[in-house]
Length: 261
Ligand SMILES: NC(=O)c1ccc[n+]([C@@H]2O[C@H](COP(=O)([O-])OP(=O)(O)OC[C@H]3O[C@@H](n4cnc5c(N)ncnc54)[C@H](OP(=O)(O)O)[C@@H]3O)[C@@H](O)[C@H]2O)c1
Image (cartoon, rainbow, N blue to C red):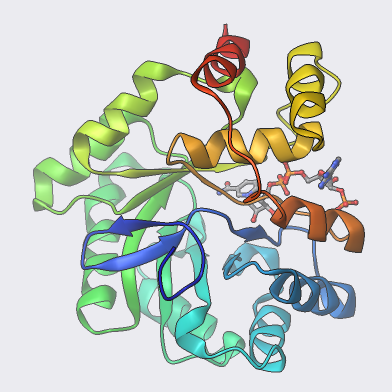
């Protein structure tokens, strides 16, 4: 635990990122605002949005309405793939909508469709970081070869790669490839990729008197993988954040890893 009062992972540039975040895709409008506010009230200190989600204004308003200090909430947003050449105006629009003077993490949402755009876009993210518009920069939906291309061209390692992840997608080698490069793996869609009635998950959940969803989230965190569950249901928002009262044994971790085949 640290000043954020949450287990965190250290990104380059001495930026601490909470391992548990709140995903906001499809949490829009007043319902989105209420859900983010409920999430911050439930203890999340990290919110994941994107230009493409169309909810940055509601996310920013909820952060302000929460009464939390800006430095106690980690905010991520993402550059859509169709903004090549317009990166700077896109982050400025994100900051305006969020009502913030910087975000904590800015990601390239998907690799640009033209491979020749990859390095120039990455350089624009680095420039935004150097100007203080974001504390850290990274990517999303990148393969290992695409990470290496950025690192080799600029000597700058993406702080994070946000990719689809969950027990059924567990890939020890891919995880190690991130670790070896100093890229923090952030998983998205932890539930959509998981059969929550899987007997391995229900057995482990019963042993700890928690839900299979909580086991899935704890499994990410115990691997040092950032996870960003989404829910607009108040009870689920609360229980998804209540994962600090138990931890998984080495054998349970191995059993869940094995769901990745
Ligand atoms: N970088 C990318 O390309 C990318 C792509 C997809 C997602 N993401 C990010 O990752 C976040 C999470 O991914 P996601 O929204 O795709 O999927 P998810 O978090 O895996 O699943 C969300 C779904 O699970 C339900 N749910 C939530 N808690 C549950 C629980 N305890 N038990 C059973 N069901 C539960 C939610 O229902 P209710 O809401 O009705 O409760 C919703 O239908 C997104 O919100 C977004 O921030 C990023």
